[in-house]
Image (cartoon, rainbow, N blue to C red):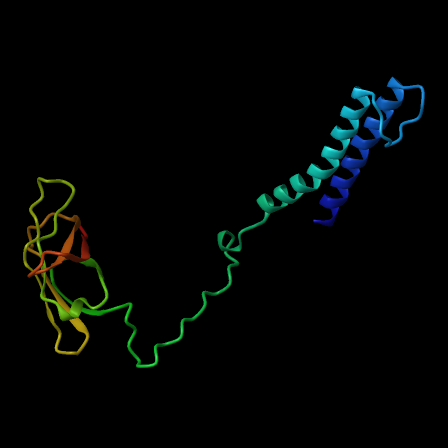
Length: 187
């Protein structure tokens, strides 16, 4: 970084020296920064002042753009641990136990809004992007028996084509979306 700043100052000095030589070539008197009525000399003085003021800003901008983001090179610091809430429950998450009946491996992803365990929830089915694949309908969300936890039950038919199926989880009474459910069925 120090070499870059040093290089920038040498560039500034070079431009100032060139400006002085140009000004001296236009006038038989040596160049000085004095008030004058000559428009050309006034323009040159302003240009040199502008360059002297702007070049450090350009250098700072370039230095900001060149900074290395440690998260991109694998040397990022460990994420900060969040303290546990005083009552022992985290109100931003909800535990979900999952029961899957399938002859093939299945990966399940569930996202529920906070406080959804207090509601009566249903899934309207899971669909693939390919509309020719049958929707998964044997899905239930029930209280798990453990306070603050839901149980998700999925039954995958043996004939169900492999792929990704997704859908929403809604409040049974209001129809408001309370989360999403996505599964990947392996071949």
